[in-house]
Length: 268
Image: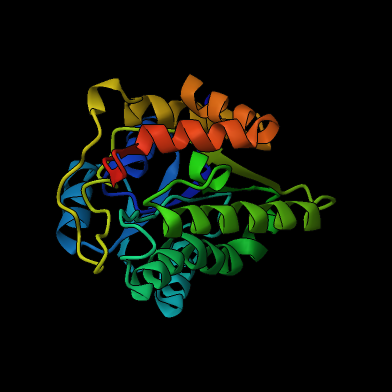
């Protein structure tokens, strides 16, 4: 029998990318899935895809505390409790600090950090009661600040620090807290990345043919959830970056600068 059979799994940002891949993997395993997203039409299409099972889907902007409260409360009302919360919803940005509007930084932090805080806070009592798991989808940018992604990096550093503190607080409760750093994964997050004025970029400069497929990433995440791991860093590039930044930070500065810049211009 699958570990996830009859487990109530909450996934924020489940209409595309890693979130959608997690749902596509979990439902055949017998999990009871609850998800949210800002786009009503995408949620409706997701429900149509799984019309033969109970998929709880709620329109929710995770940067809004009241939306998160309603989403979590409706999940508990529907399924009776929560076993696993995967804080997946997120946005990125691409702009130099000197050019970026401060509102862009505020918006990225509101979604990536506070969205996880809100959902976790409202779900914490139920997860603790069931000795479940809390997961944060972070990034290599949570270990190594990336140029042109200053707000994104800040939000992921904050998320990991907050989850580490929470993990320590819950040490004797039976609750597992884990953060995941997928590395470059095929998803819509780069297309939806905000520009310096807070508008969606609408394009990606990354070659997605060299990235990990979202479905493969989802499988790694769920395996780690089942094993109740502390952290999960995916891809060789991701592991190498974390290692080099820890032991050779000055050298890593040069490598990262070379990767993201060409003749002083941000290229990725």
